[in-house]
Image 1 (cartoon, rainbow, N blue to C red):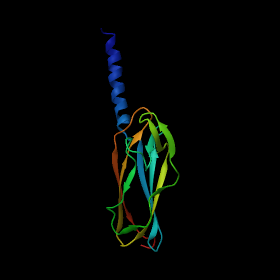
Image 2 (image 1 turned 90 degrees about the vertical axis):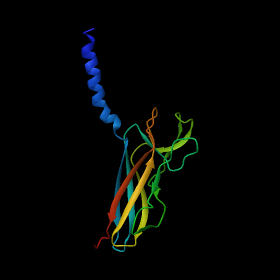
Image 3 (image 1 turned 180 degrees about the horizontal axis):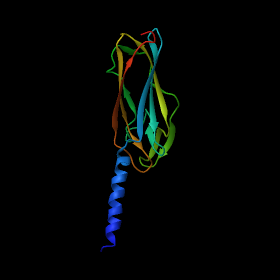
Image 4 (image 1 turned 180 degrees about the vertical axis):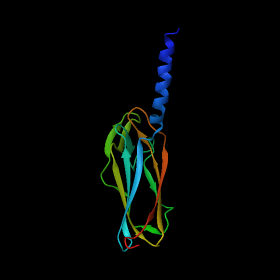
Length: 155
């Protein structure tokens, strides 16, 4: 029985070492603002996708995973003048977990939306609702919020 003690200790140690890595989200989010002196510009939202994972697309069929959505409605002093669009199209893949063709990005992806500021103290608030999978398991839908100030170049 004593020969199992080192093995059990090793298993417990490894479990505690692995738990923080498992708890991390496989997608991290960043945002960047480019603004001209006239108050026009672009908000870029970048998803940093961990290798082996994928971020689901914006338009998915019913009965599958949750699509990625962006809600900018709580932004202030800024008018978004176009649709938020990805810089490249997602892959279309037969997803074995859901048994249907789905769209996703399997590497870093940027989304861009044009805007015009309407106030000197403009801010953006973007709630991102998304879901990720790695081919054998999925993370539950997650909401991440990005916020920031939008200052014109001459201020």
